[in-house]
Length: 499
Ligand code: ATR
Image 1 (spheres, rainbow, N blue to C red):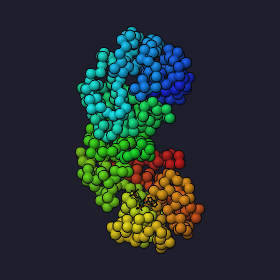
Image 2 (image 1 turned 90 degrees about the vertical axis):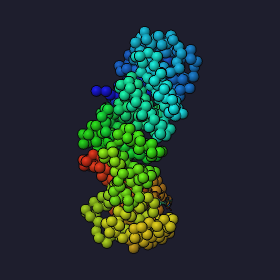
Image 3 (image 1 turned 60 degrees about the horizontal axis):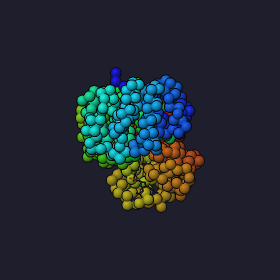
């Protein structure tokens, strides 16, 4: 079975530092790349004793500044370092496509060191990358490597298409195709699928190349060792998206359900048309959709559920027989924890105040009206509140009319971004409203778990629900749409505790 090896790039200033990193991550890694260009001059003399201390294959790399490396010396010095070290047990040496020194090439051959013939581009994916890679090998035994910065979704598509084309033409392996930067991230996780024999990782805070992923995250979160060429790919599209909590939730769900053939990845997308082509190339089975694409994906859908139509937003796409089926699980995800806190059902005649009138408020108001709740919408810009109220038959007002919440005292739902990532009490969107203690207060923000508004509500004796409960509920509904199986509750508990 073809499987990519997981390589950790070592960028410590001393050999000792690098050995410490190895000790920390050894359980996750198959091999190491010693970036000798990061070593301080005194440590260079210890290069020869390094491979025998590691006990796993080591790639020796002395990268020039021109290729994004740290080596400042002359080319003669660089070749000297390489030549002196190659006979001491290195498995691979990284030599660039324009590397010129015959003696170093010979030293590698004599010592049985495999050359990784590499091409780097930190400015993007060159239009002629395919041609360059096809002609890059000097000897049949070489591994070819392209590490290129992925600047946009179109470039990711191009890189993935090239990798798959080379896999068909030349077979699996002896090749490394790596997209740098957050947009290139999927190529690091999907290296086996793309035909790459090695994927590269870095230790946190020490990224040798942009596109940070450490070995533990690749293994524990992205299930790297399980991914083979038959992997079923899911993901989340957004921009930015690298900090999304969804991969944690969905991949844990896969693990707990023993679905070893599935993986869920973040796709940072700036061009939906290119993404939908990529989805076909990768045979993506389902995606979550987050900001700013919830509206933008709608024209690409083959079908839309009632929630997508009503909320004007789609947060889930499932591919079925080539059709793109759109859903809005935010709506049921919002209602589920509310129903749970009310003993299973929302009582008739409930009166609720919704703070905000943006996209999120629209889904919330639709969900509440569907349950027969009477709704007051208060928004900073009263015009937007008025428009939303007209669509769903609600009352409305401005944030300056907070006293009106007293007429809608059962439930207060906060849908604005006020309080996001904030602890300070001034980030409370309704500071003039005094809680009576009987309200249920629901803030759809999930970081922090207790926003300034929720903190004040708890202090007044109110029951509170936060955005994490909603996120986990909607992720569960997505999981069912993606896999046909129930989402294991334990998949969300561990993560919630981190906050
Ligand atoms: P989303 O899709 O997350 O709801 P949105 O459609 O941009 O995003 O809506 C943001 C909501 O947060 C709006 O209700 C916005 O109020 P305005 O319509 O007046 O812009 C509200 N909001 C954002 N920042 C705010 C602030 N500092 N104070 C009060 N409301 C704010």
